[in-house]
Image 1 (cartoon, rainbow, N blue to C red):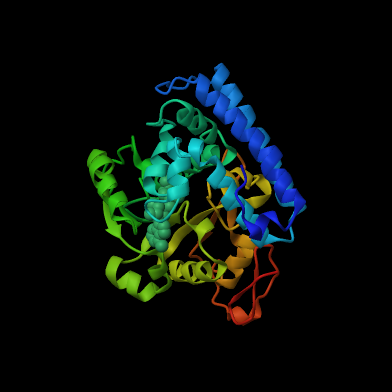
Image 2 (image 1 turned 90 degrees about the vertical axis):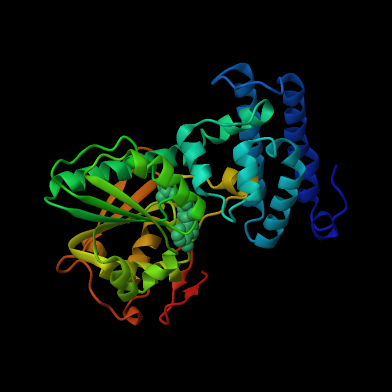
Length: 371
Ligand SMILES: C[S@@+](CC[C@H](N)C(=O)[O-])C[C@H]1O[C@@H](n2cnc3c(N)ncnc32)[C@H](O)[C@@H]1O
């Protein structure tokens, strides 16, 4: 039932129709599934309940997408309707481990290290209907992309270490659970030092216990509490931690504003050793539909195209013509690699560059202006 809410219900018949037809149908299907699925059931991939939960979830995504398209020019209305949608579907989504964690954000952030561990392991502590919802969420395009991203960065690191000689220093910003270092090979006679930085102390405890302790002798991993915003000050970072041959960050940039990223990239460029590489992963908004993350999970990212991201790098003084872009196996994630080498990072007055972008362009004063 729709409760009285003047701010949305009285405004548009389409809102009433959305809740009384589309959302009601989704709730009816979830109620039916809940009555049939054993509350202790462990989902089996592709069994009848999985297929039916998935069909209901997809149908709901379509109706949410259609509502959003019809009201594109009314972001406040969409926000309100999304909140009501989540309220109405909470009896089922609160039973899903991923759905509940994304919506309640116990770490203040939907994509915390524990969420990432669940997405990597594709296992849920939930049972019954909640576990079936988890199964559907962990098959969403972005969940596959997160796994592809982790495999891509691991491959990148292994290739870089193999192609370079001698000791190496690596900085991992917003390292989360550091799963790319599991089953890590030995590099005999070399010293690979990884400074793993995150602002979540619980993530750091996790990597100390589960990752650092199982690395072979040639690699050491040092967990460090660090707010990525501090990377804007290269002098402070260098005096405390030194310079690095590889600096990378995977899974953070999509949550930060253009303005913050410009400062961070500029600082990180200066924190590289000569010949060092800076690698940052972004989601490509042209490659996925954001509906289920925003509507069903309350999980938002900045929606950026490749052009938007290159614009940020230009603003930070990078020569984007010299950058290497690689995609993960899902094609959703793009890794942007740049090097501290002649012509690759140039010091620019930000006022010289201003290119429009979809997510908001950067004005001459360096501030983000919404398009
Ligand atoms: C989506 S996870 C990615 C973790 C890891 N890089 C991976 O790909 O598995 C994002 C991580 O960013 C961390 N984080 C969020 N804001 C941060 C900040 N301002 N500084 C440092 N870490 C941050 C979170 O604690 C979380 O561990």
